Image (cartoon, rainbow, N blue to C red; front, side, top):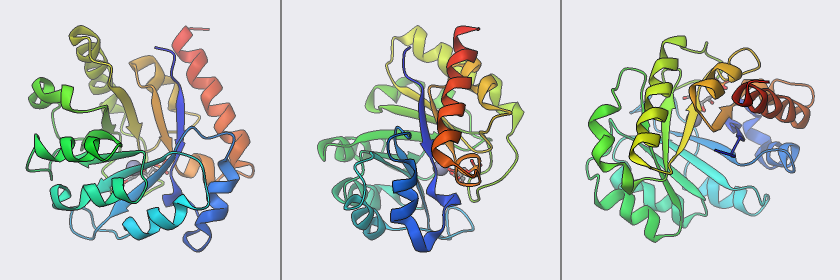
Length: 224
Ligand code: DX5
Ligand code: ZN
């Protein structure tokens, strides 16, 4: 497992200066994490597909859209069409676990499946070949800057073991409260894509913060 991707979340950036936020991490970030919220699935409202399309013109970074919305079956393809490189839907909101991932893939994007902290992953085990990434939420979705839920570490570990046992090549993403105090434990548990909002955009030098986080995660994984 060679990948150690850091995906800064623009939820923690200045919403009036998103292009600048993308530029600030270009050359350091592996992807840009776009948190889409609809006031229904979560009590917050952020970006739509139009924002993704606009942002696409200002950055060459892959746009990783995390849809915290109701009815992703209907809306997710729009994000792939808008230029997202990956589109992640929530297991609690998606209805059609056959057609929706297929539709996203057919538009050339990778597709992810996310679970809230209280949602067990085991029930999705048999259908994971339809997905390219699994996202274990390490906070309740809705807001940046929350404290990492350490209870989620055994879940991350169990997902990693299950993926390895089944020979599935899905990326394993963690999102929420990932920072210099928690990223090592996430890496040890087997995560390979790390979303970080406040730890990157709250830093004086976002690019340097990304490099430091990646280095910590790499070292934790190799045990030295
Ligand atoms: C929470 C979002 C996260 C959030 C992470 O609903 O999905 O991506 O922005 O922010 P931090 O790293 O500050 O917890
Ligand atoms: Zn997110």
